[in-house]
Structures are given as C-alpha cells and as structure tokens.
Image 1 (cartoon, rainbow, N blue to C red):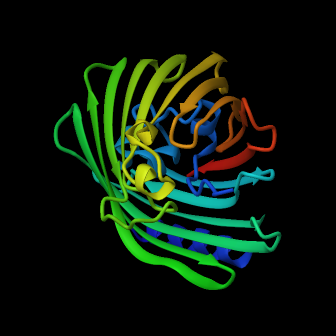
Image 2 (tube, one colour; image 1 turned 135 degrees about the vertical axis):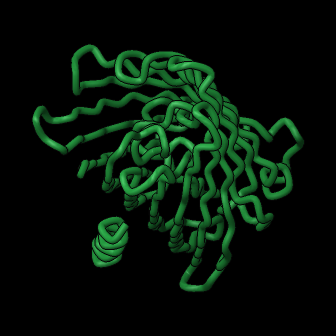
Length: 294
C-alpha cells in the first residue's frame, strides 16, 4: 500500500507542476476511440473513470497513465493522469485527476476562459466471482474568468456482472449528488460487452443525462446518447479500435478511430485516438496516452 500512496503523490505532482456550451466530459483514449463505449469492457486506467467496478478485472498490477487531449474550436483541451493498484489486496484502488482548459468567444464577442479540475479516489470490491461493486468520490472545481462556478464534491457508483468470460454487463451512476450544472450532470450509463478482451470485443453503451433537459431547455428526448465500439487485436500487443456515437444530448453524431501498442518485453503502452463530429468539422478531439505497468 505504501507504493500505491507514493505513486499517487508522484502523479499529482507531475500533473500540477506542468501545468457554444462546452462538453466538460473527459473520455479516456481507448473509450474515445470506440465512440465512448467502454463501461462494461473497460480495462486498465479507462476503468477508473468510466466504471470503478471494472478496475478489479485488471489482474495484479500497478498502472500509471498520462493523457493529453487536444480539441479544436468546440472541444476541450485536457491533461489527465490516473494510477491503479490491484496488486496490494483484493480491493482495487484508483486515483485520477483531469485538468481542462479552454478559451471560448461568447455571443458578445468577448473571450471567456474556463478551467475545470477533477480529482477522484475510487475503489472496487468483488462481491462474488461474477459481481463487482465500485465507488468513486470526486472533487470538482470549475472556474470561469477566474471566478468559481462550481466547487463541490460528488460520487459515482458502478456495478459489473460477468455472465461468462465473454459476456459482461455494466451499470454506472455519475455525479449522484445533484449539482444542477452542465459541467457535472447526473447521469446513468449501461454497457454490454461481448467478446474476448485480448482478441476481439464489441461493446454497446447507453448514457442517460438527467441534467440535460433542464440545463439545455430541451425535452426528454435529449436524455440519451448511444455508443457502439469495436476493438480487434490482430497480433499480440497491437490493437485497432473504431466506434460510432449518436448523441441526442448535444444533437450530434460522432465517428472515431484509434490504435494502441504494447512494446514487446517492456512495460510501456502507447495509445492514440481521434473522434470527429459528422456535422461540425471543428468539434473533434485528438487524444494521446502513455501507460506504464509496474
């Protein structure tokens, strides 16, 4: 446990030492490459942010992840880091932090500056061989033009059910203390995974956003987004991802592609992903991640 605590402080030190309505959601690189679909099939550090219950599926490891995402006019710029400890005990632990920054020109022609910080600590507990529960506590801080817009704590709950080695179902609740802010919407996600994690996997996710109709002045049809993603690994260590997302919350569709590579006889993995709106060329995100296994 001492090693895990040291790694937590190391990652936080590195991140903070470097230091139209916006979509404040951060999507890890692999999930982004699969159209956002990774709640049941999430592995490695993606699990810490999408479904805390999925962390326990990683095997006995320490993992460090750093991510940079670049968004064009309508998308965010993110720095993110995460660490996971599933080696110390049967209870998996994770710590992650995301830092968002964006300058946006408002309707009056003036420029607004946004900064958004997320800091989270999560755990996963195996109730049985096939059922895992997860809990993540989060601190959120949003500033607009150097004034606090949001300064609160909340939590996520996750459930993962293994029906077999090849079939998994996930349920996740996000920001379950109602904050009434577009930056921290109360959401419920469900995911269904089918396949072999190391060879071929297909996932379908549904996300319901209970804040969207009120914040965006839309009817109940704006509640949902749907994601379909595929991951295939033709050779050991190399994988390709692709996905499609129909997002009725912001009334846009997206396609995405990505690749990941684990260097032979090393503990380093690199990932790259790209997501593009089908209707707005400027609404796109390019994501890079580095993972280190200890």
